[in-house]
Image 1 (cartoon, rainbow, N blue to C red):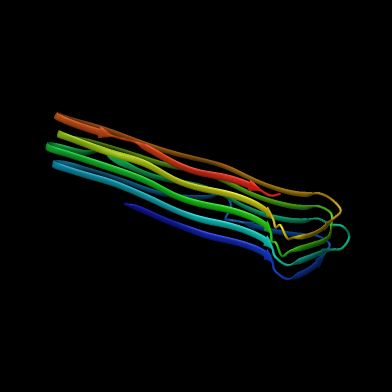
Image 2 (image 1 turned 135 degrees about the horizontal axis):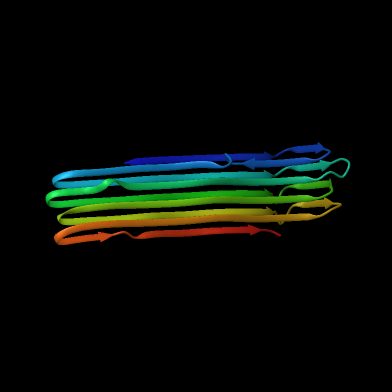
Length: 231
């Protein structure tokens, strides 16, 4: 059994009044994070039972915002940026051939499960003001790769081997300009949001037996990946 829980919240904000030549507000969750859980199991005997379970739960947020007032002297730019980047993997595998029953029964089971939620949100609040700036650039970006892999084997007079890889992935990037924000700009207003995400689930099972053998190895990935920019 392998269990991994990873949580992180990274924030950057301006809530008061700031006067400067330029302003950059950036929140970046621990970059290029690699998170994993791995389990293996095997058994051999008259009646053999082996089970592997790997679970990785990840929740990470990067939040960058301006809620106060920013005054730029000299026409410099204002930037608000939030970003996350991660690779997450769960593996539940057989050690050797898995559950090998030398007599009656061999039962081997494996489950690899990843639950991930990542958000990158960059925003200029409804109450914010930006005066004297050149460009105002608001960007949010998420990059993730998630895999769950389960493989198991079983053998005996009766061999039973279920395994499943499951990914539940929710990845969101949002860049937002508040409807009530007061802006005085000499240059451009840019709001962009990008999400680059992959979710892969694999299951594999091998069962041998006489008179009966059952092997089932599904993979299931449920991905809710989005990017929204306003205006």
